[in-house]
Image (cartoon, rainbow, N blue to C red; front, side, top):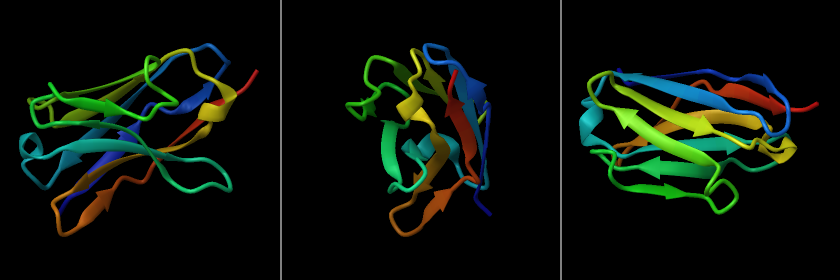
Length: 116
C-alpha cells in the first residue's frame, strides 16, 4: 500500500533553515507528481509546493516562493523541501501528498515551529 513518511521537522528560530524529507513506498514514485502541503493551527490545509515526475517542473505558493525549494530523488523514492528564511507564519504541520487521480494519499505530517 502507499506510504508517505515525512521527517525533518522541529523548532527553529526566525530566519533559520530546515530540510524536510518524504520517503515514499507502495507505488512507482518516479511516475507521479508530488506535493508538500501545510496546516497551521486553526487554518485550512494549504498547498506549499509541487514537483513534476522528473523534478524539472516545480510550482510554489506565493508565500514561500524564493525561500523554499522542492526537489526529489527518484533513485531514493524521496522528496525534499528545503526551507530557508523561516518566519513564524511558517509554523504548521507539513505533509507530503500524492494523488493518482482517484485517491489522494497523505503522510502523517511533521511539525515545524518557528519561534524565538
